[in-house]
Length: 533
Image (tube, rainbow, N blue to C red; front, side, top):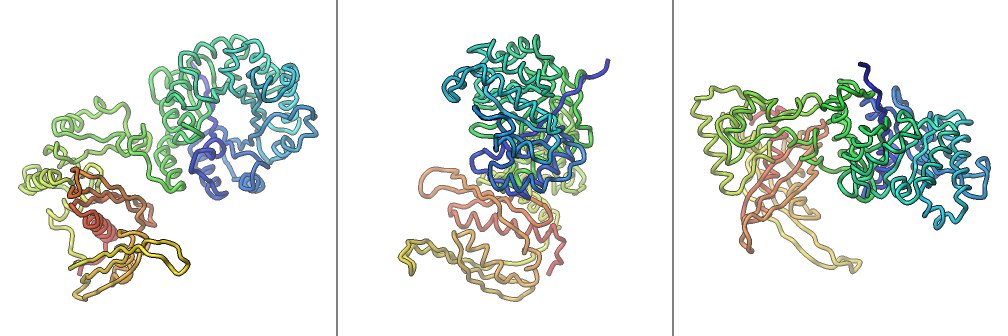
């Protein structure tokens, strides 16, 4: 039996840009659009031409897409104007795009109160706007704003709005759960009723995640008849976000009930780019990827516990819902105080250390892991620190440098402009190739000051750490009170695209931070193959 085609519409560059703290540059938009095109989505919504300088600049010089249809977003025409005499609509219809997605009101309450016009005029505005888009040579989509609320309040009016767009020639009529309040069973019922009037192969779904059900609602809509799904990478979007395409796409492509009945434009090669595409977005937003993200997170296929890991290695499909490689991810065997020999051996194999299972160094490493985690270290989140510890046990990590002492002072004072500031100053004494080096530097905090001091003069290793960046810093208090043990996790990245975590533990926050910092630098030198002293 032939599979039905599902069409994926990405809203990251428009809906995602409404996320609190997200501000895409033109180049960010271009990089994301190209990654989405490589992934294989059908439509890429680039933004709203004329709404702001960034979007206008982006549409003036659009990305070159090989597969996806570049789409502009905008509103239906304003009341009291013709479609030809509305500057806002003209900016959207004048964009060099293959499709336009126009949003219009379908809830009678909004028409009565927000627009203050006759409901019949609103119905006419929708059809006239869609017809204007088609007349300009675009494929037209209609986003039915607050449709589920509108349908519950007045189904006849909501359906009349959809019919107006359909009669005008809209390719897709997209049912929007704009406030994210519709639950999956409601979406399933309403879509089923709508599909009696509007063909399913002309219907789409656009869910927000305000109840945490955007993915479930989207899947329910597909089962009820829609064949067009809108969402964003990593679930970006205003308030609680939109349906997460990174989780939806592999579910539609791989899971029973969907995979055997439907197909998307995303082939197996595109699916293998899913993890990289998700992480690219986080990189551009300068934030750490969510480790627990379904399918693509670092912990999505991570296993912890000796007996469990032993079974995973023998029969992984019983413990993992898909093969991680299908979405560009990989299995991780975590090392912790629950670890058994299987964990240690599997983790060593991952980092390229082949060793006999009965070798005494395996027992030595296992005991060291358990002892150090008893002291507060955590290696299931600090893979680089574990690798360094393991390779040191194996005798593979040279002493690139030696730090004999460090000191940090924090001063809170008024500057020459009378502004109260806090300045940290660090002094580090180290030895490289027998050469004694003392460096002093300031920073906006103790860790930054220590990092700056090390970078000021790191001997012949200075070029190796020139592209090293500390991108995240997490502190956890393990025991209460002012004398508590503190665990610091530092995430680092380099110019080659590498990213790793290191850990430090001490009753002193600065000392714990410095341990993690030194591990990060050592790991960078080892990874680069720096020559030993």
